[in-house]
Each structure stands twice: as C-alpha cells, then as structure tokens.
Length: 109
Image (cartoon, rainbow, N blue to C red):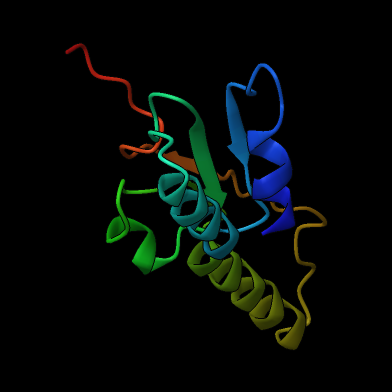
C-alpha cells in the first residue's frame, strides 16, 4: 500500500485514482478509510476489471468493465470461421464500459 501512503502525503490530494484493477482499488479504499479520508468526498476511486466483489465493498467501487465475455465470444466466432476455412475479420472492437458506483458519485448533503 505504498501508493496509498504516498497519495495521502500529496498536497493537495489528487481528485481521484484509477487503479490497476479492482483489488488494488479496494485496498486503496480500505487504507484511506483507516486514515479517516472519505471516499468519494475526499478522493474518487475507480477500479479496472469490474470484479463481482466491487459491488460489496464500501463504498461500492466504480469500475471499468473490459467485457471479457464479449471478448471470448468474438474469439470463438473467429476460431469457428478459421476452422470453416473462412476469413475472420482482422479486427474486432469491443468497447469497455464504465460501471458507476458510489466511489465516484458525489451527493449533495
């Protein structure tokens, strides 16, 4: 959690953090809450991979979903085409999705 320790020593604090993945983001949230910082009031946090557990931490973690199910579906479709001696598309674009939750939502008191 060296990153989180370094983060709270910044003056001023950054507006937010986009973590490598949800697990790291949840660790940052846990550490910052122990230091009495409020998420999202003091700092916004975003994870990256939309793990199921991101819905159950406090606050719930906003995450970027890479849509791995859609990636596997596209890869399977390409493989079937290759096996059928057809030309698969050279590129397939699968857009990530932002899943907003309370780690980035500011509410009026």
